[in-house]
Length: 83
Image 1 (cartoon, rainbow, N blue to C red):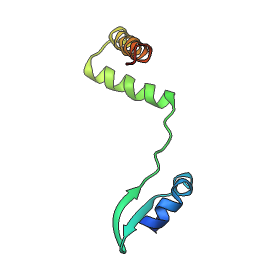
Image 2 (image 1 turned 135 degrees about the vertical axis):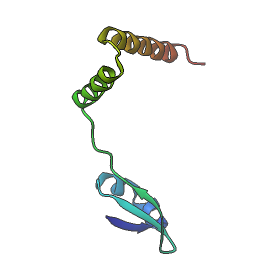
Image 3 (image 1 turned 30 degrees about the vertical axis):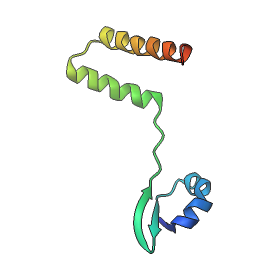
Image 4 (image 1 turned 120 degrees about the vertical axis):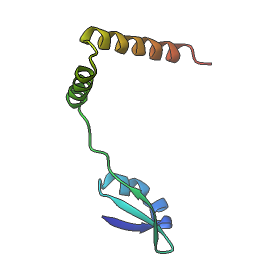
């Protein structure tokens, strides 16, 4: 874990993010915020978690795929018809 003050954080934000290390931001020597790296998630991990959640809730594969397709259609529609 690394400690940096607000000024240093502003000057070196890109470096701090790239370091993939937890960073505590301080103001006047007191911690005010924390940057925490997010672990990358693969599609396989995500699909496995979704499958377990659906299985536990009683949602069928057909229902889940239908809901996913509805979301995709809505997202496509929003991208096409922006105001």
